[in-house]
Length: 95
Image 1 (cartoon, one colour):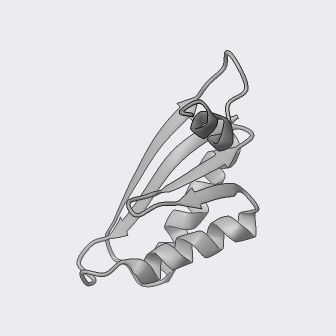
Image 2 (cartoon, rainbow, N blue to C red):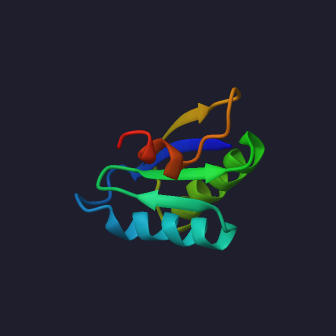
């Protein structure tokens, strides 16, 4: 299982990016991947890295299609191979 943190921010538009965050979240819903949004980023869970990259590309391009001329996309990937890890299992480990 792949767990990744995604942040997509358009530059030079305005100080608020909520409109673009909503576009990214709509894209993730359409792609039917599990995700959780927090105040600074969105965490995504996919079966494999190929699916993750496909979904991230679609989200990035959705922000382009919404009119952004410059975008910073940050992606941090946790690709654990020794055992099954999910967003839920990582949070349970903290208890």
